[in-house]
Length: 469
Image (cartoon, rainbow, N blue to C red; front, top):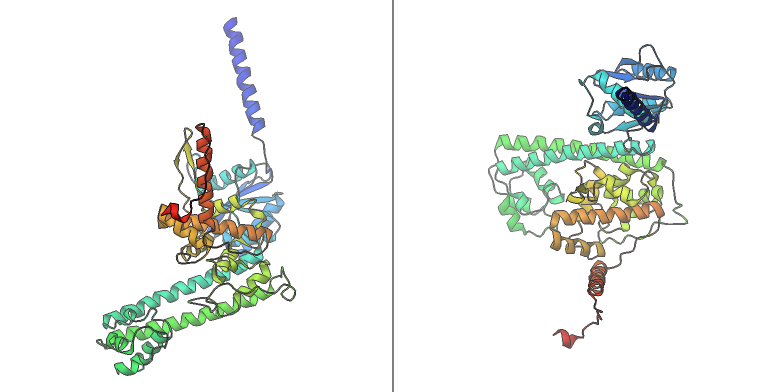
């Protein structure tokens, strides 16, 4: 009798615990759907009570995507989740968003542990199930107007990479002819380099004539350039050089056409500040002319007008890097609650891995983010800067080494950027000794606190010059 009662009590406890566990794990998104994105077809799963066939497949054609949206509306779906698979998700995202659905894009790493055998059907059902219980968080995506600008800017970056490959082909052809032009000038695609290369392709072989084409700003003498241009002008190498130059010129034309599209689109974006009442502050940078692959229009003024802040006042950030960051993060900082969230999304904050109460690793996460790369490149450019951030970078470099110093300085740049992005204002450089003085104050405060813990009172007074010597 007692055994029977104990069994009944155990079964009742199990039922009660299951019921209690099920109640705590409630439904967050009852009208959720999951999509497994593919190159040829997409599998869509909705709740089982919405349709006789809760899992359907749709082809990748535009008409099929609209049919998918109509079916989801018929099933009373409000929110849709999908994986970021290549670029196949982009048309689905845009079409569903235009139909009024709340679309979330999730990282494939976060949903890869599908129970059972992995198939397209199980993938979409697993996504739908996780999203129903609110276990998925969507990836950050800026507003649609910034997405258009981001597409233009990313395409421009692709064109620059294509053009750079043909610069390497030019360099290879010159090296095969033993023309050491890169040893006497810093950039073969500059004024002097392209002038000499085009003259060589036009048939000029007189070394002195070629050397006199140098720009007055070139440090190498005419004799040095003439000596570097002496080589073996073989026909096959000249042909390769000719084609490399022609392809380089084609991509330069495409980059200029892309710049025109970017400038035209920037003029269409809403202004956050009136340039007449609040004109653009004077630049604090010594070199104000565009360098390298920078656009040849007034990009800095456009960025100031649409953002309301002159981010180029921050040491290390130029118009190109600011445009890269804003095209990735948008103009509204509301998506990032604090600067810590922003730095964590960039992958610039320590990723503490704690086991048993001990930090096993604090290395930053490996992220593929153009905004992060822009902050890192800006941090690296502060090596010889006579500013507070330059002094901070050099001190961190002496302490931790160059890689960690770049990360630490990029983290500080991101925090300053976020503060201006959210609150506005003007950045003023506190001077190269600012962070050094802060470091000294921190060391002194630590010494006083340590002495107090040991039962001593520490009086610190500065030494005069005689005492120091």
